[in-house]
Amino acid sequence: MSSLSAQTFDAKRVQDYIDARVDRELNQSIIVGVISLSGEKYFTAGEVSAKDPRPPKPEDVFEIGAVTDIFTATAAASLVVDRQITWMQPVNAYLPEYVGTPHFGHLPLQLVHLVTHTSGLPHNPPNLQPKDVSDPFADFTNDHTYVAISVIGLTIPPGSEYRFSMLGYGLLGHVLTLRTGQTFNELIQTRVSQPLTLQDTTAVLDPAKMVPGHQGLQEVPNWHWDGLAGGGGLYSSARDLLRLTAANMSMIKLDKDDERAVRTTQNVFTKTSMPNTMIGYGWHVTRKALQAVYWQNGKTGGYAAFVGFNPSTKTGCVVLTNSAQGLDDVGFYILDPEQYPLPKPPPSGLRPAKQLMKYEGTYQVGPDAKIDITRDGEKLYAQIPGQPRYRVYPVGKNEFAYATGDVRIIFDDSKRGVNGITMLIGLKKIQGKRIK
Image 1 (cartoon, rainbow, N blue to C red):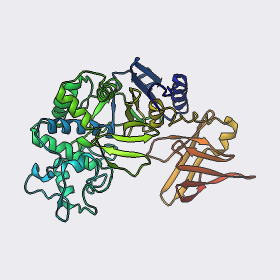
Image 2 (image 1 turned 90 degrees about the horizontal axis):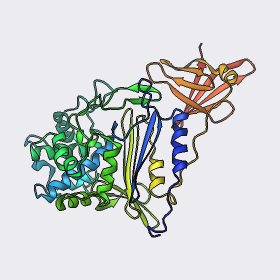
Image 3 (image 1 turned 30 degrees about the horizontal axis):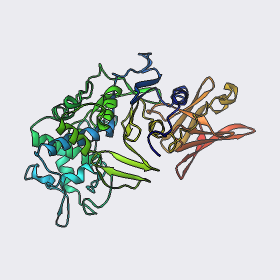
Image 4 (image 1 turned 120 degrees about the vertical axis):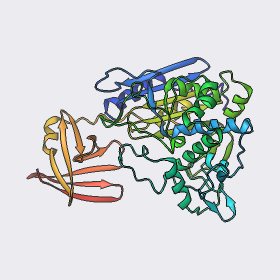
């Protein structure tokens, strides 16, 4: 299919879908940005917080999680273009001599393996033991990274298999700072933000510019980063990420070397475990029919992000939400509506309040585990003490499910009333007795 005959997305369907996501309390607020040869357009839904009841704006800053990888990869490609590093250099060429690095036999770990997620390193470091689980990387320093890579033994040859690794990208970002003598934020500013004229992207958290993150409808703390910033530690806005996609489609003028660096991140390296998807030097590339979609997503404790572009149609898309519920389906639909149809909006999940009243109570689901079921009008909620409250949605007569679909609650409703519940968590079944 040529770009002239490519199907375009339905703007009303996108707006209705994100409105429904907010109405069903799956997301606190959402902003979708689209850039094409016709210009830029934004769609918004929800309010950024209960304390700040306004829709998100293009300049609002969100945590972007693993979308950081595209910036780290672009910075690395810029240094390659400037001949300050090469992809085939071993990682230990830049680390202190006392730091051991993983290897497989005589095969060393190289920078190319880090940037393409083929290092064989695990997703998270084995010694990740945060003092505060709500801010899991705040106290993980470069020294912790050194300990992690010193004790890891590779089970596959580097470069042989795709395994997504936040640790790998965190290590790559650190190596680049050692090579340049810059902080990670300085590296991103000089190698990416300034060449692309980005205004909001930073590794330095400024709460005044952030929209607050949420789990359910409850605000959660921001994540801070130290030693692994290259794998998830950037904060950015819809307008900056949209400009990033424009640069990748040659829709903005860049210096020749900066253009080469940006293009390098699109070079395909190897296949992944995902259908029709390859990994490049930064971007994932999913191809269906004749069109390819370049994309990356990310998620933190209270945010989710998607960024991608379709070079055939010259369309770029950004989806940001300040909830830990991603909307990749919106991004893929916008970039190739024919191959990635948008699902129907989630059902409203409303039931008569009188019917929901019988479920309210506290249920014992383990020796030291309880779950509270509460109601707000025609909506039902489940909450484990000490954790956020989550809306649950009717999927059967006495059956409800979390928005993610991976946890279901079945109420034991008899003539004597509701006396217990059964929780289905994946393949695990947990019986619970009503105690209150």
